[in-house]
Length: 273
Image 1 (cartoon, one colour):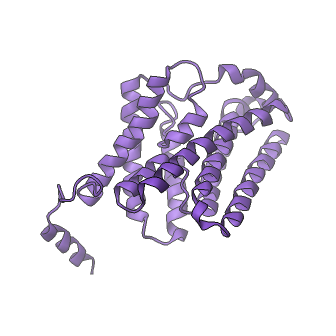
Image 2: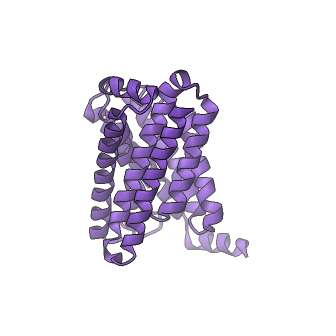
């Protein structure tokens, strides 16, 4: 239980950091991309600790799978509540750009901030483990150089898994985008937890290029190219297919609707009312 208490303290510290950044940015809204930095930092720093609990806590700390899944869901829910529209996910940032909802400069700054935040999250987690506050973290610190890769299948299978999960996630994300945050945030957190748990024996379904960079790119077992194809191209492919299926075209690339006629879309809208 002491290991879990230490982990909870670590999670709280990450939350306080993000909240502090969010409060400070209210005075400088033009630097809103920094919130993407904090959002990505929180995702990577906290998810690395969840991985520690999954890999070591079950036998070193007596923490069962139900505890780890619950912690992951609570983490995703907290992240959604605190960070709001700052997803910390380059795929979602690029999707806004492709929907003509964000200019190229803010998109580039946001994506760069997300990868920088992911890298800082990895550094902070490494330092936290080096403190060896519990037996679980002592073991993690000793095993860091031999961490287990999240890519448990071949590159084509991994690409298919990540792109399929990203397709499902982005379709539901787009469907919920105009719903109340009270409905959207818990459902998105539940969906992310479900996909991650379901794909744990394949790729862990990160569906987030910067998150995958912070969590598994440093682990031996696969080349950088293999990781990039699975965890960068996979989610981007799934996102673009989801956008094409949901909207009928990709606004930034195609002005004309490729899948749905205006008449069909009008009937669909009329049926709602």
